[in-house]
Image (tube, rainbow, N blue to C red):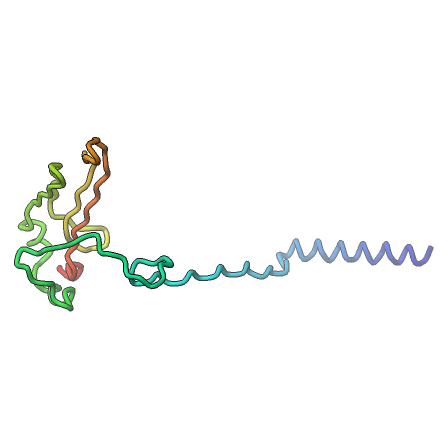
Length: 148
């Protein structure tokens, strides 16, 4: 009987200590969940396991002058214009995608960079069938965040 009474007293004491810890906010901290493993970086050729073969480039860009952009373009353009000058004089652009006309006025993006944005639903013909596509085009000017 004495053992049973001692066991009940010990159990009651543990419950009292647990309640005190809970009341005081002294709960033991749980270990944070294990971090997820990082994914392997994408390969320069577009990722995927293709046996190291480079994928064929499916787009092109030919400039008006035929020249390539300078290497440090951001730095080269960071002082070329003022923000107000670009927004007032940048001019509306028009883009024709298979007969669909998209237009855009100069704007400042939430990042502070300047450029143009246009987009919308456009009609496309594929294999003699008309389908709808969604276009979204950002044209950003490297270095324009520095324009004041």
